[in-house]
Length: 338
Ligand SMILES: [Zn+2]
Image 1 (spheres, rainbow, N blue to C red):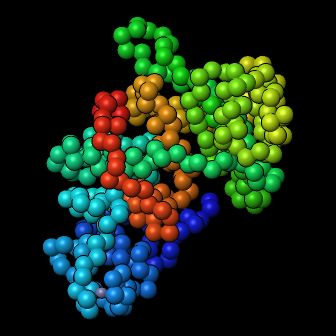
Image 2: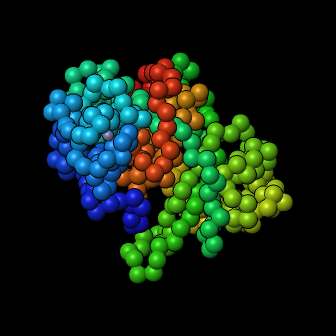
C-alpha cells in the first residue's frame, strides 16, 4: 500500500477510531497537534517573528499569545473549526469518521458514536466537512506511462417513491478509473491479476451519445492515455480526440466485462452499495454531490491523513477552502441525513 505522502513521523495518524480517540482525547491534545502541524520547529509569531513557546490558556486551548508582542494567534483561523463552539476533538473525530469509514456516516450514527447531545450540532459538523468533499478534483486522470484508464457508463437508481415498483428516475453516470499494477512480489489478488484502481472521475451525463460520453472523457482524462471501453459506438470517437482507444466486444456477457473491464465494475459496485446502503437511494438533483463525495474518499483511500487535513482545512501547504461562504441549505434534505 502506498505511503501517505504527507505522513510525518512526529505526527502519528492512527488507523482505527479507538486509537484515534486515545491520541486526541481532548481540546488540548488537538491544539498541540495543530501547533506542531503548522510550526514543525516550534512557534514563530506571525506578527513579530519572535521564536519561543507562546503563552497558553487552559480555557482557550486554540489561542497562542506571543510572549514578546503579546498578540494572539488563533490555531483554528482559516479552518473549518474557526468560530465553532464544538470542542476540537469532536471535529477531529468527525473528520476521521467521514474520511476513513466505509460506507459514509449519517448524522444519527455520528451523533451516537460521538455522544453529541444535539442532532443539529452533529448535522452541522457533518455538513461542513462534506462541503469540503464536494469540491471536485479538477485535474485530469491518466497520462501515466504503461497505465491505462477504463471508461464506462451505468445507470444509478433514483428514488422510486410514489411511483410504484420498478425502475424510475434512473440517472446515467459516466466513470473513468486509472488501472494500476501492483509491483511483482507484493500480495496479488489473483482474480484481478494484481491490478487495482488508482484515481476515479465520475459525472452525471444526460445520455449515451458520443457528445456526452466523449465529452466526459475529454474533461476527465489526459489526452494520449490508453482508454479501454466496451464496444458501444459512441466511444469510437475517442481515437480522433487524441486517445489510444481499445474497445472490448462485451456483447452483454458479464464474464467478458469482468475480464477486460474489471476495475470499473468494482468501482460501480462500491458506488452502488454506498448509495443504497448509506443513503437509501439518492434524488437526481443531489447525485453529482454524492459522486463528488465518493470520488474524494475513493481517491484518498490510501492517504487518510491527507483527506483528514484537507477536510479540516489544516492542510497548511495546500490552499485551504473558504468555509465562511458555505451555503447552509445545500445538504439539508432527508435522504442524506436520516
Ligand atoms: Zn509577537
